[in-house]
Image (cartoon, rainbow, N blue to C red):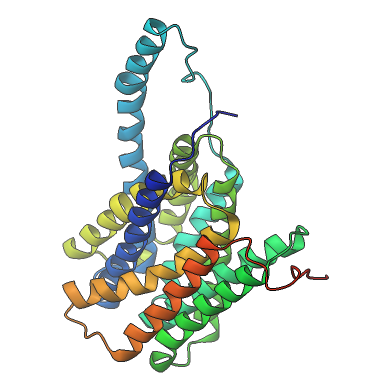
Length: 313
């Protein structure tokens, strides 16, 4: 395992930019699918394919330009080079990535933005929390209260806008949240986040080709819809996931779970700026609650009101 020095400022920046990319993804998806500029299947295919092409170019630059310079500097400084380490992702994580992207798109055909976001991120939190508990980890009361505060603020933000979703769309978004949670958990174990992200995208290519053939009769494209899908794939997905996997190596399990609840807040801000959506008192109050919960988890992980809570199966 490569030894790295923890840099809190770098981690903060990586996490911040990744969360902004996630919020942008919601905006691009809403613009494309909400306005029926492209069908959900084609949006998924273009999103992952454009992300893979971008990452292929990124890998070429890294392999032929960046890595040789690092090797030369290592030789001059008489230090061992680390560029020979190979990491090629995994088929399992590529499967989680593809399932997340596909179910995310199809769920948003019937779910409004607020309902879809609530189902997605609530599922992510529950999945990551249950994964931690089932592995026998203890949660301090500070961590538990922080998580409850963040989720409560999230529910308070979106509850007034909720409509009754279809059972199929609800199930699809739950599956999307579970898939993203497992993809995030895999990133916590990554020894080479950049390479794993790139090759996980590459490994989705067989799924993309097969799915494109299956979806060919339902294909509906507009120039605007294709542009949104490409922006989603290159900037909000490929680049965003590169940053996210880098940040995950320095984030604690619960922090990685809870900070993602900032995404709906960022999406609301983006909606206000770019889509002229209003900011209500509910939004302001819920933002304070969410940020308070996140700060409690991040700044006081070991704060104990009494003994830690242990969950029994």
